[in-house]
Amino acid sequence: MSDTRAHRRFRSQEWFDNPNNPGMTALYLERYQNQEYTREELQGERPVIGIANTGSDLAPCNKIHVFLMDRIKAGIRDAGGIPMEFPVHPIQETGKRPTAALDRNLAYLGLVEVLHGYPIDGVVLTTGCDKTTPAMLMGAATVDLPAIALNGGPMLDGWWKGQRAGSGTIVWESRRLLAEGKIDYDEFISRVCASAPSLGHCNTMGTASTMNAMAEALGMSLTGNAAIPAPFRERMAMAYQTGRRIVQMVLDDLKPSDILTRAAFENAIVVNAAIGGSTNAPPHLQAIARHAGVPLDVTDWETIGFDVPLLVNMQPAGEYLGESFFRAGGVPAVMAELAKAGRLHLGAMTASGRTLAEALDGVHSADHDVICPYDTPLRPNAGFKVLSGNLFDSALMKTSVISDDFRRRFLSEPGQEGIFEARAVVFEGPEDYHDRINDPALGIDEKTILFIRGTGCVGYPGSAEVVNMQPPDALVRAGLTHLPTVGDGRQSGTSESPSILNASPEAAVGGGLAYLQTGDRVRLDLNTSRMDALVDADVWAARKAAWTPPELHHQTPWQEIYRKHVGQLAEGGCLELATAYHKVARDLPRD
Ligand code: FES
Ligand code: MG
Picture 1 (tube, protein in one colour):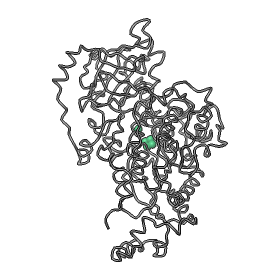
Picture 2: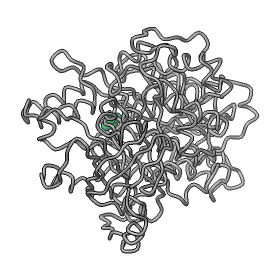
Picture 3: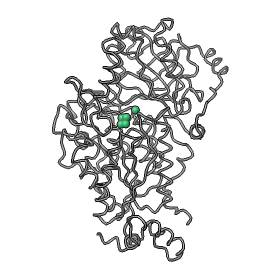
Picture 4: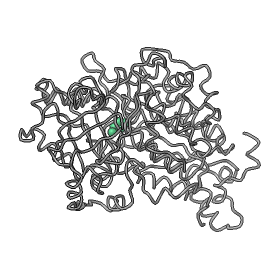
């Protein structure tokens, strides 16, 4: 043990060794002693390390953590700490209705209460499925106890008839094949299930792999953590090393506020573009930044990240899956390429106790087909554009929207470079979309843009991943597999659909999308980063004046609490009142 130990009084000792309050100390000791802990340990100046377990039968993407617990605890014990595992409210992307996004802030609140109210000196945050990672990092940022992230890792690669079958991506592909009549219901199910051959989170560069890469890029995990597949032996070793490391972080008092700096967030934005990361990363990073008290704006995503090239050849943007990404070097190899090109702040501190420059020393890509050199990328400008206009104050645009096909179909007139026009067809949420998409009366053709509203944080509630809408079956059969889509909801990180999404403010709170009507012309001007409905100002004003907010039907108490306090996606979709709380661990709760 380090010398620091003898001189530090840990926070947990306020519970377990407080002679000023023998009554309470005895009560804490007798109940924690009746499980595996002894008085000698609990009063022995050893830090108590919480392990926030996000895995359970209800959360299969994170279930691997149930089996990693022994290794995490062994690491903590071997380094002189006392491990105490506790459960986290489950957030299963593919299990929770109406959407797991609703529960990110709930799990966040739960974590803050546990870390503040129990005898904990540091915490291992187990992460994996999409929202588990931001929920844990948001909580750690608010509390500001030493914290380290350990993800469960992606599943093994999926295969179907000799082809890689990637999580989520195969669903979007199979939906098209079903619409074209090329596969039936049973093959649809078999194809999709083939993409999940083992424990772990999604094996594509969807939101899960993206957010775990973000945790590593921010410096909140050990170097190399994010990409290790769940069943690999390296994952067990990483669990053990993470357990060892958090004890030293407590002894050194290395806290989230030392790691989550503005420089760290700028690094994460750059990495997100280079990996072809999910459009869900901006709201989650905004949320983490706000809870950390770091200024970050949605426009930073374009300013800092737009011109970063795509380096990682992984589905949905490319062809490979998690196993290849790991073997090619994972996040450190990507960051090493970005570092050589001068794109990262290398002085940023990481959970390893080393700066980024030290952590990346000697690292390089082991397979240029999977992680490209910076100078020969898969494509340039892989970041997001941030649009504004009369339809929204901000919305994210994936650069893949602007394909050659899009230019051909939507260019407003010859010579008007970068200006596109289309006819809008508007849906009131996903049920309305499913009911009406094949209705010929809508007149959907190749020059249509599909809009969806009522799908933001307040409207849905929780903000739904529904903006990636498929064209009518007849158009898909005729070979038109994509139409541009726009919405106030989100889009699955496993979809490469051309979309403009996360429109804020959302329609349910009176954002501009609320006043759009089917048949309106809309214009996208890339020169000015604007998207507008081409509707006369007085007509627009009249629609606005006639608008009444939708009646919200809450099904649970949390839905009502959430809707009352949630902000917009552009600001991270946080519980607004929670963003005022910082470093709450400094303020001990009453005995
Ligand atoms: Fe959980 Fe993708 S659904 S990681
Ligand atoms: Mg998702």
